[in-house]
Amino acid sequence: MNRQNFGLIITNRSFFPAHLVGEARDALVSKLNTLGFGSVYLTEKETNLGAVVEYEEAVACAKLLRKNAEELLGIIVLLPNFGEESAVADAIELSGLDLPVLVVACDDDMNKLDLSTRRDAFCGKISVCNNLYQRGIKFSQTKTHTVTLESNEFTNDIRRFSAVCNVFAGLKNSRIAAFGTRPNAFHTVRFSEKLLQKHGVTVVTIDMTDVIATATERDDTAAISDKVAEIKAYGKVVPDISDDKLQRQARLCLTLEDFVTKNHCSMSAVQCWDAIQNHYGCATCLSMSMMGDKNLPSACEMDVTGAMTMKVLSLASGSAAAYMDWNNNVGNDRDRCITLHCSNFPKSFFNADIEIGNLDVLATTLGAESCFGACKAQVAEGPMTFCKITTDDSKGIMKAYVGEGEFLADHVDTKGGVAMCHVEDLQSLLHYICDNGYEHHVAFCRGHVADAVQEALERYMGIEVHRHKA
Image 1 (spheres, rainbow, N blue to C red):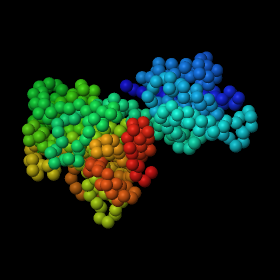
Image 2 (image 1 turned 90 degrees about the horizontal axis):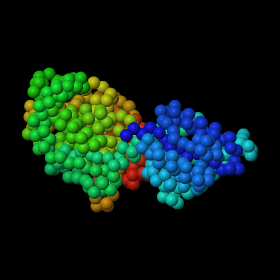
Image 3 (image 1 turned 135 degrees about the vertical axis):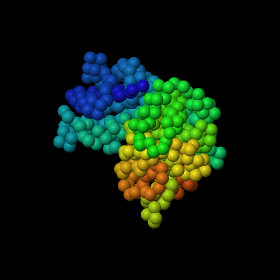
Image 4 (image 1 turned 180 degrees about the vertical axis):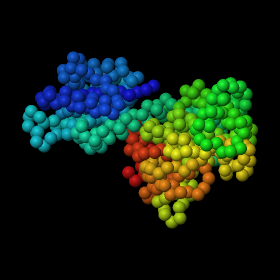
């Protein structure tokens, strides 16, 4: 479902200047259009000034929002002046919609505090938020208490709120495909399906023997041939990889993708070793990488909450996410570390050409002939956000940590998919991870979106969030 519209509730306090209402509405609609969003709101033909002030107007607004519910990403409450707080709360409550809400109050101009131009939205916002709080309606705020609608700061507010809405919409009633079981030694990736379900996320399981049998028996020649061509275009396949290995990999890619799409899943976690290598003869990394570049993130080592974390970062950033290990120190520079995996990083995440070859570490015990399908390169420099969601079964909660840092250009001389990371006060983060029972895995996306991730998980999903170095 492609939600690209915001429902607008524009309110008014009748003894304030009426011209402010239309001017603010036009400025907000114009701003949203510029950013690629549509708007659903009452017009001046439907209520006085198109505003929500009286109870009957709140009823009309609620009806309009319900009618367009499937198109709405979130709701924006706009206060051109003090506004009518109870009518705003009525409209949202009567709509029955479970959507993120952003409360926006317009700046006063110090030169326009006379009776014909003053707003007092600064004060009115507090009253609106009080009413929403009383009714248990969750809401977000702009970075500053009041804003100028034409400003770049408000543009950033809208972008952040849209990311929050994307995360909420993408997780609500979502489904995770779980391929196989966790590696026996990895007690770290154990999780609670019941806690996930409580937060609206369903796990859809399939045994790895069924995956292997389905991939082995595929005979859809045209689809296999097309997938082989897609693999060759995706990265540089190392020399000496036989056509049989490419076709085997193609059948696995098709099998995993088919299960995900047919079961309406938007993410997956895969038992990536060692049953697939021992009983089918290739690695799953390439399949997972290619799904990630199709907005179907896939986590390693059957880490189901890791898949959820990848999806959150992908939704917040609008780009592919990658899954790695917090892996190595970098000499005595305690704010840098190396993160890596075999790897299944999406090609677009690398922001560079990739090599498609055999697993390195696992090939030493499983044999290179069974390990084709790893995507290798170093992650390009640039800003990044990291996150990990987990279920804390002993406390009966879901929790997460999130923060921001940088990928560095410094070359790392090792195998697989690798990144050089800088995180301010990394040592305190690592202490927090260890003290609070988090996994060794972590998800990354490009760009800084920690504010949106924290807001979406904490405020709207009810997940406890630790923000590193806010």
